[in-house]
Image (tube, rainbow, N blue to C red):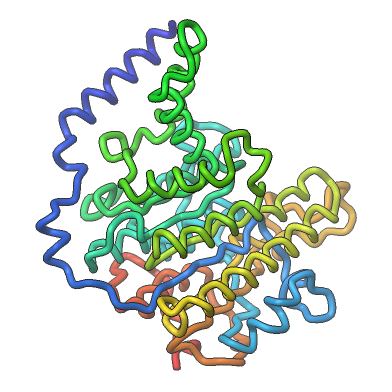
Length: 391
């Protein structure tokens, strides 16, 4: 066994044990906060990186519902950008944290892995702001995450000393379901002997990925009940439930029905499959997200709890390269101009309808705008509120 890893694990365990009392938000403190009445907010990361041409350009779009229907219901910012500062990288993890924190920052993988994207924000996320301002349980602030991006399982809270793990959001993903399923199968005595030892080791390794929330990892009973419903319906082999971004849509629809989130972020990512080299992977991914948007909006329109009380904020994590000469199309790691060029659509109560604001704005304005919609202070954000959207 690697003694250095063993020592590090023991160290982390000792630190966790010593600080366990600080990892639980006191019930009295939560109960003293005002209840949140709305509007609810759904952030849709139109992710995997997309260009304006294939999304908001009516002549070339692969997202007709977004481009031709939803834009009539809200305010479109076709000229949103990621800043061109040298420290601003056009990556999925970086863009997601720029959206959540409202600040550009230089992120490095905590384990030093190239393209690892295991990042830790230094200032609060919008999830932390809303849970510190209102009496909202963790499971009603949700990140819906993709199965191929486990590193994004851990963007649910920052390292800020006034916020952090006490105000974290819940994360739903196929990875989290696999942890739940393995826990249940072991409790049910499915395996014995050597096979059981292997499964126990597998579970420890999966749980260890969430080392920052150790001591506050166990999900609420309502989340356990959610996964039980999922297991009862879809089974255990993964061959029945949808995959990729279709899975995220299904998880989001179930969440709206069973968990009733006040703030939810859906981290779509299928367009990123263009890295395999086939342009159709990218355009098909855009169409899948567009269909997911249609289902999410239809679900909120049909639900009295969400109807006329839900703001959608739809924004890409980053753009993509437009160079027609490279062998693999639509990359985003080269920091090209078009990789910094994105857009945003905001729609819902209190938002102007059918408006196009064609001035340059920054991606980091999203967090402050969510704060304005939810009537909460976002003290550490650096982007201004998108005031032109507010009616």
